[in-house]
Amino acid sequence: GVMTASPVLMIRSVPSGVTEKDLEAWAKSYTFTDRDGATRNTSCIKSLLLTDRMIGFVQMGDIEEARHIMDLYISSPDQVCMRRPDGTHLLNLIYSDKQEIRAQPRAS
Image (cartoon, rainbow, N blue to C red; front, top):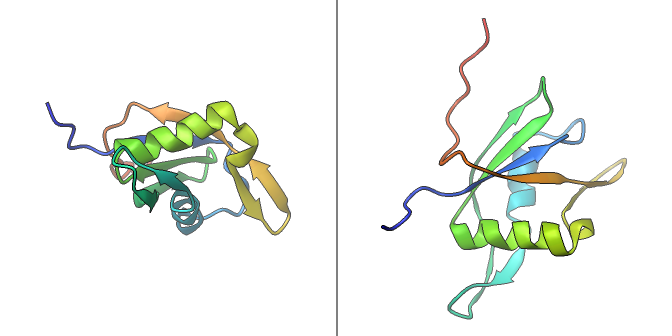
Protein backbone atom coordinates (compact mmCIF):
# COMPACT_ATOMS: atom_id res chain seq x y z
CA GLY A 1 0.00 0.00 0.00
CA VAL A 2 1.01 3.62 -0.43
CA MET A 3 2.28 5.28 2.71
CA THR A 4 0.34 8.49 3.06
CA ALA A 5 1.68 9.42 6.47
CA SER A 6 4.94 11.30 6.60
CA PRO A 7 7.85 9.98 8.61
CA VAL A 8 8.83 11.63 11.86
CA LEU A 9 12.35 12.06 13.19
CA MET A 10 12.89 12.44 16.90
CA ILE A 11 15.77 14.59 18.15
CA ARG A 12 17.01 13.71 21.61
CA SER A 13 18.75 16.37 23.69
CA VAL A 14 17.75 19.45 21.69
CA PRO A 15 20.20 22.31 22.38
CA SER A 16 18.81 24.80 24.88
CA GLY A 17 17.15 27.89 23.44
CA VAL A 18 16.05 26.06 20.28
CA THR A 19 12.46 26.76 19.20
CA GLU A 20 10.05 24.81 16.98
CA LYS A 21 10.89 27.30 14.22
CA ASP A 22 14.57 26.39 14.60
CA LEU A 23 13.73 22.69 14.36
CA GLU A 24 11.74 23.36 11.21
CA ALA A 25 14.58 25.38 9.66
CA TRP A 26 17.03 22.58 10.47
CA ALA A 27 14.75 19.95 8.92
CA LYS A 28 14.57 21.98 5.70
CA SER A 29 18.32 22.59 5.48
CA TYR A 30 19.39 19.45 3.59
CA THR A 31 19.72 18.88 -0.15
CA PHE A 32 19.66 15.43 -1.68
CA THR A 33 19.07 13.52 -4.91
CA ASP A 34 15.80 11.64 -4.91
CA ARG A 35 14.92 8.36 -6.63
CA ASP A 36 14.11 10.16 -9.88
CA GLY A 37 17.55 11.77 -9.93
CA ALA A 38 16.19 15.21 -9.06
CA THR A 39 18.06 17.36 -6.57
CA ARG A 40 15.74 18.80 -3.98
CA ASN A 41 15.62 20.24 -0.52
CA THR A 42 14.18 18.43 2.42
CA SER A 43 10.91 19.84 3.70
CA CYS A 44 9.15 19.87 7.03
CA ILE A 45 5.43 19.58 7.57
CA LYS A 46 5.59 20.45 11.25
CA SER A 47 7.72 20.33 14.31
CA LEU A 48 7.09 19.82 17.99
CA LEU A 49 9.31 20.61 20.93
CA LEU A 50 8.81 19.11 24.37
CA THR A 51 10.72 21.75 26.29
CA ASP A 52 10.51 19.99 29.65
CA ARG A 53 12.36 16.98 28.21
CA MET A 54 14.32 18.82 25.48
CA ILE A 55 13.05 16.37 22.89
CA GLY A 56 12.08 17.53 19.42
CA PHE A 57 10.09 15.95 16.62
CA VAL A 58 10.10 16.95 12.96
CA GLN A 59 7.63 15.55 10.47
CA MET A 60 9.44 15.33 7.15
CA GLY A 61 7.83 15.88 3.76
CA ASP A 62 8.27 12.28 2.66
CA ILE A 63 10.09 9.05 3.36
CA GLU A 64 13.01 9.81 1.03
CA GLU A 65 13.78 13.01 2.92
CA ALA A 66 13.70 11.23 6.26
CA ARG A 67 15.89 8.42 4.88
CA HIS A 68 18.41 10.92 3.57
CA ILE A 69 18.85 12.53 6.99
CA MET A 70 18.98 9.17 8.79
CA ASP A 71 21.53 7.80 6.28
CA LEU A 72 23.63 10.91 6.84
CA TYR A 73 23.30 10.44 10.60
CA ILE A 74 24.71 6.92 10.26
CA SER A 75 27.43 7.65 7.69
CA SER A 76 28.48 11.21 8.64
CA PRO A 77 27.04 12.02 12.07
CA ASP A 78 29.05 15.25 12.21
CA GLN A 79 26.89 16.60 9.37
CA VAL A 80 23.74 16.19 11.43
CA CYS A 81 24.11 19.22 13.61
CA MET A 82 22.50 22.49 14.53
CA ARG A 83 24.49 25.70 14.43
CA ARG A 84 23.70 27.95 17.36
CA PRO A 85 25.22 31.22 18.62
CA ASP A 86 27.08 29.24 21.29
CA GLY A 87 28.52 26.74 18.83
CA THR A 88 27.64 23.69 16.76
CA HIS A 89 25.60 20.96 18.44
CA LEU A 90 25.60 17.41 17.13
CA LEU A 91 22.12 15.94 17.16
CA ASN A 92 21.04 12.56 18.42
CA LEU A 93 18.37 11.26 16.03
CA ILE A 94 15.92 8.42 16.19
CA TYR A 95 13.62 7.38 13.40
CA SER A 96 10.31 7.72 15.19
CA ASP A 97 7.50 5.21 14.79
CA LYS A 98 4.97 8.03 15.08
CA GLN A 99 3.08 8.37 11.82
CA GLU A 100 2.46 12.04 12.44
CA ILE A 101 2.96 14.64 15.08
CA ARG A 102 -0.15 15.22 17.12
CA ALA A 103 -0.47 17.98 19.65
CA GLN A 104 0.66 16.73 23.02
CA PRO A 105 -2.03 16.71 25.69
CA ARG A 106 -1.14 19.32 28.29
CA ALA A 107 -0.09 17.83 31.59
CA SER A 108 -2.43 19.13 34.26
